Length: 116
Image (tube, rainbow, N blue to C red; front, side, top):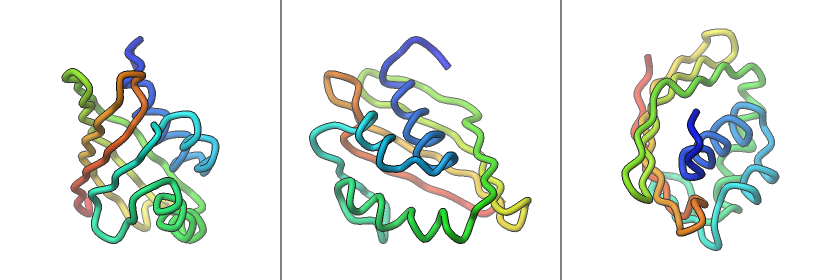
């Protein structure tokens, strides 16, 4: 990664929150006073994140999630991620866009994904 707090927070939310399953800790550490979610089926706020990812983590106990590349442009962070779930049972490639506040904490999220 890099020294940028914006990149570090996006990376931390993805890897600590989703890959490692530490959602509450990661949300507290890496998101701002609000969290607007632009993904279909996921409500805004930390509660929406937890609601969506709790069943995901339960049905995908083995998660190989790798941040392949990232770009920072001001408060925006673009992340390209590879995911292999349950030893290759499902493979995904995602592109995420995070908007961050003045402290580098994530306040908005957009994504697109495709099965690999």
